[in-house]
Amino acid sequence: MDFDIILVFLCMAGMLTALIFDLMRPGMILLSVVVIFLCAGIISPKEMLEGFSNKGMITVALLFLVSEGVRQSGALNLLIKRLLPQHKVSTLKAQLRILPAISGISAFLNNTPIVVIFAPVVKRWAEKMKVPATKLLIPLSYATILGGVCTLIGTSTNLVVHGMVLDAGMEGFTMFELGKVGIFICIVGLAYIFFFSQRLLPNSRKDNYDNDETQPDQNLHRVEVIIGARFPGIKKTYGEFNFQRHYGAYVKELKRGGQPVSGDLSDVQILEGDTLILWADDQFIPTWGESRVFLMVANGKDNVPGESKKKRILALTLLVFMIGGATIGELPFMKDAVPGMKLDMFFFACVTTIIMAWTKLFPPKKYTKYISWDILITIACAFAISKAMNNSGVAPMIASYVIDMTDSLGPYGILAVLFIITNIFTELITNNAAAALSFPIALAVANQLGVEPTPFFVVICVAASTSFCTPIGYQTNLIVQGVGGYKFTDFVKVGLPLNIISFIISVALIPLIWEFTPVK
Image (cartoon, rainbow, N blue to C red; front, side):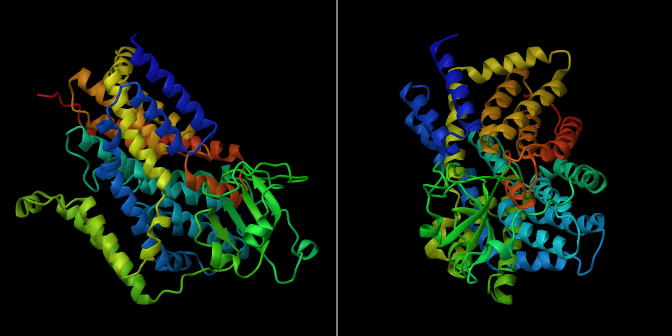
């Protein structure tokens, strides 16, 4: 085993440890590893920078802005109001009414804004109708994840793998290609939620606060926020960070891991994902409601953007234009009609974003605040890490080991192992980093077997996206944990069977849809 292989293994182990224990933001952790590979000569400067110009990564950035344009149009707020019944119904009927629609929306929009908008509204509706909110919030998050596996743009992970496939010189995925297996996972997953979530999820837990006794000022109102990655006081204690000076607010209660933290909060460190009950004035929501320092801000009222019906229609028309254009643009007759242009998702995302900016569906002067830069840096660095695993020989070595281990089971066994490895990674670290680690192994496996690699790429997309059994595996899970007051074990209890369902369907169907065709 030469020096490059040993160094890559050590860096991979260090990266996984740093990601699991959240020592830095994922983007900075991956960038640190990439710089080490650059210094060691394992990758060249060109290979280090290729990820920053990759079509998949830039498409993810554009889709952040498209999602923001749809969100600010008020279309999502209007939709959830119409989906929720206006009279008391059973939990099952409420789920049947809202979850399929949510999965459909999340197939084309970023999951996080959907959950940020829908979760407070669903919780408020549940309290009003005397329905347990805890029976709806985890299913809400899971429905967005299930919808995301159905299309190329449903989750950033699909676009990352798509970008890596293109980078390897192969044909990428079409808009609905992943839906050939994703739709079955979505349907069976939703059926599981309908029939079993009510038994497995806890009853609603009451918030631990009292409006009348503790309100310091009659001009202050209760606001619930979830701390985001850009919060300036991360790792400081609540005693050191002055909420009153920064936000004109007082911390009433802290919930972590879905559970209230009792006692004096002065010595408690501020962490991403903390849910806070604040007393704040009327200016808090207008000032900080769209700030990226908080994952979510809710005050028990409908904070609907004051946009016109024309804006909502325009936003939805542009979304349909983007999806329809990218789908039709991949068809053979369109490729023949305009041979000099590639009318793919990247092309139509560019056009849609620019139209949204000029029609002010999102504030064009503030466009940078709507992009999650850490995710983009993570994705860009993932490409460089993939190159390092190939250049050093780590990926072929692991591939040989996987092939030997599953020799008696054939390609089905390899698919199963790749799914399990990727799925474990995505539950512990970010989904994009999980895909980055698994992709070069999948490519090396296909090369050593002499078969087309598409089945292995598809299984990585599904395994990296289906993160159900931990709240830290997916940001939407983290949001609903704070809003619903769930314990970690609630996600394991309901989510682990969903992981198993995704595993079984993927390993059974993927080889039937994308055959293990020998490379000629």
